[in-house]
Structures are given as C-alpha cells and as structure tokens.
Amino acid sequence: MTTFEDNNIISEEQPVKKSRKGLIIGIIAGLIAIIAIVAVLFFNGTLMPAKMMLGKAVNKGKGEFLDQYKQGYEVIQKTSKDVNGDGKISMKVSIGEQTKQVLASTGVDLSWFDSAQINVDTDVQKEQFGVKIAGSINDTSITSADVVLDSNSEKAYVSCPDIFGDKAIVTDTGIQGQLLSKSLEKYSNTYSQLADKYPTPEVMEKIVTKYSDVLVQDLKDADVKKSKKEVKAGDVSAKYYQLEIALDTKTVDQVTLDIIDVIEKDKDTKNVFENALKDQFEYGAYSFMYDSFDDFWADMIKNLGETKTKLKTELDAVKKNPEKNEDMGTLYVYIDNSMETKGMHLDIKNLSTKDYSFEYLITEDGNNSGLLINGKKDGKNSFVMEGQGEDKSDIFSGQYKVSVNDKDVCTLAVEDFELTPYEKSKGKVKIKLDSFATDSFKGSPMEAFTLADYVITFDTKSNNAKMDLDVKSGDASLLTLNIAYSFEKIEDMSVPTNVVDPNNLSDEEAYNAIKSLNLTSVLGNLEKAGVPEIYYKKYKYLSDALATGDDMEIANALHNIHGGSDGWDGAEPLDEYGEDNPDDLESTKRVLKAAADMPFDDFAELYRMTEGHENATDEEIREVQEMLKNL
Image 1 (cartoon, rainbow, N blue to C red):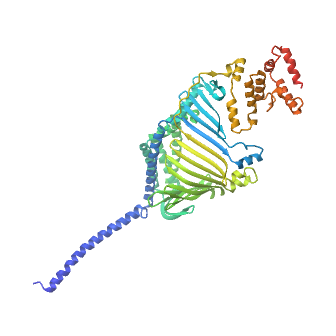
Image 2 (image 1 turned 180 degrees about the vertical axis):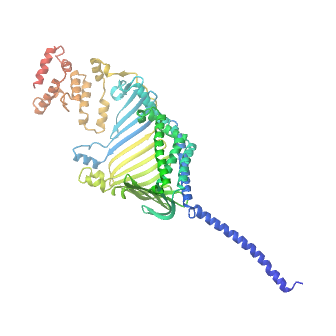
C-alpha cells in the first residue's frame, strides 16, 4: 500500500527524470556551441596548425588569382576582337608664363607660344601603312598631311593639299617590300592575335594548381612556426598570423627540383611560353639565336636538366650528412583571419657574400589601409615605399613616401582612384620631389621645375585612354602635356594616283614643280597663330617669289632656303641690298661668295636664268665665277 510519503517520493522522482533530459539537452547544446567555437577558431586560424594554414592561404590566393584572371581574360577577348593596330593618338603641350620667363633667362624667347598639338591617325593594312597627321599651334590649325608606305611598290607617298594641291610626292622607302609586309603583319598580329596568346581560364587553373601543389607539398617538410603579430605599414596597424618558414638547403632545393620537374613534363606550360614568345622567333631577338621555338625550349630544358643534376647532388649530400643542410634564410608570411595573405618578408643569407631582404605588406583597419615595400642589402635600405590611404565607397585616396638608399626621393599622393580590374581605371597621382632631387638644382633656371608638383590625371577604359600631366608651381601651371589614344577602325587609306617623283624629273620639270607649290595657306596660318616671322621668313620670301613668277626671284629664294655652301642664314634677295648700307653690302658679298662656291653646272644654270645672260658661254661664266671667288 502506497503511503503519502511514498507518493511524495514518487512525485519527487518524476521531476528528476525531466531534469536528466534537460541536462542531456544542455550538454548537447554545450557541445554544439563548443564545436562551433572550435570550428570558428580553427577556420579563422587560431587553432589551425601552421602548415595547414599555409596550405589554405596558398589555395585561397590561387582562387583569387584565378577569379581575377578569368575576368581579365573575358575582357581581353572582347576588347581585342576587332583590333588590328588602327588607332588615334593626340598629344598637346602647353607652357605657362613662369616657364616663358625661365626660358627667356636662358636666351630663348617663347613669349608668343602657348601650345602645340599633333593628331595622328594610323591605318594598318596587309600591304601598306597609312598615317594622317594634323598639327596646330596656339589652337590654330597649321596644316595636315597623309603618308602612305606601300610594300608592293616599296614607295612612300606624301600628300599635303595645302602645299602640293592635288598631287602627292612619291619617293623610295629604302625598305624591302617583303620586310615591310612582314613588319605590318607583325604589328597587326600584335593586336589582332593578342587574345590568342592568353591561355583559357581552364588551362590557367591546371597550370597554377600544379605549381601551387608542389609548393604546399614540399613545405610540409619545412620548419613552420605560427604566431600572432602586430605589424604596421604607414600609420595603419593590424594583427595578423605570422608564419615563419625556415629556408634551408633541403627545402629550397626540393622546391626548385620539383618545379623543374613540372616544367619539363607540362605541355600546358610549354604552350603558354610558345604563344607568348612566338613572334620573337620570327622577327624578334630570339630569331638571331634560335631557328624555332622548339630549339629554344630544348636548350632551356637542357639547362634545367643540368640544374637538376646539381640539386640532386646537394640533396644526396644533405641526406648523408645533415650538417650540410645550411640555413639559407627565412620567409615570413602574414595571413588574416579569412586566410588571405597580406604580405611577406623574405630574408636571404650569404647570397654572393651579401644578405638581402624584401618586405611587402598591406595592413587594414576598417576603411584605412597601409602599404610597405622595403628592399634591403646588408641591413641597409636600398628602396622603401611606405604610406597609407582610405577607401570611401570604392574611391581610394592615399599618400606614400619613396626613398632610395635612405634618401627621400619623392612623395606620391593618390586622389580619387577608381579601379575595375582589366576594364577601367581613373584617378589622379601627385608627385612632389624631395630634397635628394631638388638640392642640386638650387639657383639654376630649372629650380622651379624641381620644386613643382607633377600632377598626373588618367582615365582609361577598354581600348581608350586619356592622360594629363600638369607641372604646377602653386596655382600656376608651368607645363601641361595632354595625351589621348584609342584603338579603333580607321578608314582605309589608298595610294595616290596623281604623283610627282622628284628623283625622275628633268631640271625643267623640277623647276615647274617648285613653281606649283602653294605656301600661302600654311604661312597665313602661322601668322594667325602668332608665330614670329623669323621662324618662317625664308619660306615667306619663297612664297612671295612664287607669286611673282620671276625666275630670278625664285632662284634667289631657293638659294636662301638652302643656305649655300657658307650656310648664310636669313639673307635677303640679291637685288634688294642697298650699297650704301655696310651691313647690306657685307651680306651681299656673303651671298655672292656662296654663289661662287657652287658647283660650276649649278652656278651656270643660275647665271643663265638672270636677265641678259641666257646665251652666256661656259668660258664667260667661269670668268664671272672666278671673279666672285676673289671678292
């Protein structure tokens, strides 16, 4: 019979059974929590073994590289599809008032000059190459010309309607037609076959995997230590995992040996080299050393084989005597919690009796990031670039210092930088030279340029780009250079049919061709642009002479341009000098002396063109020339 107490006992025991279930659930929940925590700690690196962390970092880096490569490959395939070398390029240079003053102090007067620009369109075809050129000064168009190089005729054709009218000048190129055709083919293929030179993402993945697997596998036997370390680049600090990898003879030789094995056996690697270097064996540097790519590859494999033999000998010696396993250096790898590699520091010992080190590090703290690139030799800085920047809505700005051999060279300021890998980039870089570059120019006319800010603004997208260089002193511009280019289809240029070959003209035909020249438009444009007459005075004289049609005037003008044997510069026509002016008289004597030094046939031709001497005999002309020589 159950008592009250018994009931109490029973009633007290029932809750106990429920508590056990709760305890079990609690234990399970606790275990799950612990497993989750351990998993988090493991995958973020806290509990992960050093060698496993290294393997994950390598694989993650490989994955990120392949993702970017695929993106770049697709862009290159798209943008290179219709490109054969046709394109446009424009260059404009402008100078400011301060620069004009600096030049004036050196005796160069460019007070009249503000800017000059040239636009060039290139047309590439299988057997000819065409160039359209247009020039302007102070934003005033001066003239334009077309040049066509034709491989079939081995001729060059120059058209300039402003000067030659509807005719073109033709001359020998001095280039064999076959060589020109090959050059055009090479130039065109450089662009049209650019996409074909890149391995597909699938092939690239196979190649990268082979070499990364070798690296991970061989480093498993290396001495790898893991620690947590705070590092700093610029003024940005971050805590990363530091993997310290001992580089001894055994490790370095084994990695090198296994990589050579892959190179020897991997056809994909060979194909990448062949596609990249193909042109070099047809037209480039390697064509003088090897008959084909296969000869080059065989030679390289032979050299690698000799290296393998030496490495195997060293490894065998280390196995027999571990004391020969020398310390060659240390590699430090910095990894964040997501297994992304943020930098490395390599120390190399006793390389040709010198110690070298190289460090590359990116530190991140929120939107702020620091950068450090440091190369050392025997413990002394040979090159350092360090600074920091901030990323705001994918727009990056930063400032970096560059020094060489512990001497400050310049400061780089990056402003409003945008980047879509392989597709576009946009931004501004400001370069300020430091004392190392400026001190030696103190007191010289160039000092203003060494103290200036060099501002480079760029905007590139696909096959188009613009770049501006502005050299600024405070708010004033000393000099600007504007460059723009685009790869685009240019309308095919053709070989002119109405041509004049100066080399195949009789004297009379050559003279008539000169008389047909029209310099009025070009000279008028130079005048409109504000170019001082002194720069084109001789050609203005020729233009005026051509307008008169007077043979003597034209002959004088041509002789004036060529300068005679004395190189008499800026001389006036023979019959325009006043005898009463000593300077004019002296100039006239120089002109006559120059005429006296001309070859007899040329002097005779010029003499017979003067009025009243059309029928002069050779003997009479020789007497005149001899008399002039005695002036």
